[in-house]
Length: 251
Ligand SMILES: C[S@@+](CC[C@H](N)C(=O)[O-])C[C@H]1O[C@@H](n2cnc3c(N)ncnc32)[C@H](O)[C@@H]1O
Image 1: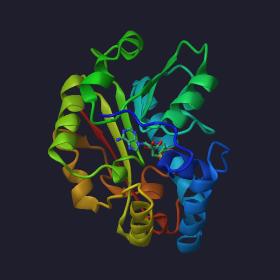
Image 2: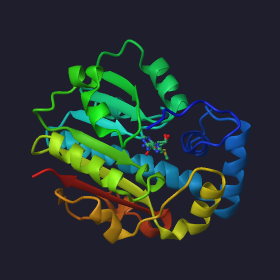
Image 3: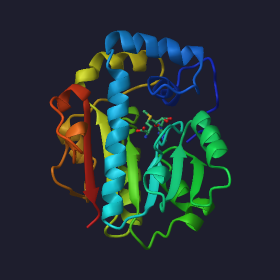
Image 4: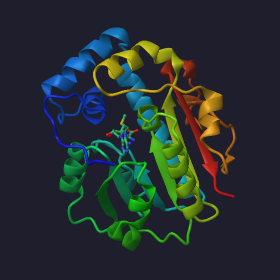
């Protein structure tokens, strides 16, 4: 895939999301899309924070199974509670297609020997898995936790996506985990807005999300709304967060 460039005149998903989370790594064009999105769904910052909370619970779950190697694809602009902060003994390869995310991640993580930052598109699975720094950090003969959190709703269902998902599954050792979260149909207007702004969004339902997990065994309770996945405390209205989430194990 062609590498993306830093273009301050075109909105980018990573920078819009950074704005929802209160970050400063975004441009006027991103904030303009975010303002329109917030007019449609004022709860977006709460939804984004709940997604981060799911990511943290899933990462702690992986650590509880003894998995301390993470491949975080679509990792975004680093914000509070990155994977290596949630599990301090973790080794983490952060991957994003967006150069803003990659530049800031490299600045923040400079000199940290337990992390590597790679700029790549998730479709380029062989490039990511074969990256010399990633290969030096992660031991692919042992289980790895693959994180695809809030990223696949920017990726249409194509043979290339299916092939990439198969490549990750086949490359990862038994006992590896895959962690997904994904926007649901309740945010159809948001998807239209993002798509018109040049950041196409694809919504998937429970069955479609489960369909992306071919060859993986779903961890209980399966594909559920994000806040309902292994909650720290009960959440009254998990479906209000318009996010589905799942964790699965490589048999
Ligand atoms: C909404 S953010 C999610 C960030 C983080 N995973 C989280 O959940 O907090 C989505 C990220 O996916 C990245 N992304 C979108 N399409 C991608 C692709 N094809 N390959 C790699 N990253 C991609 C975007 O640049 C953005 O940083």
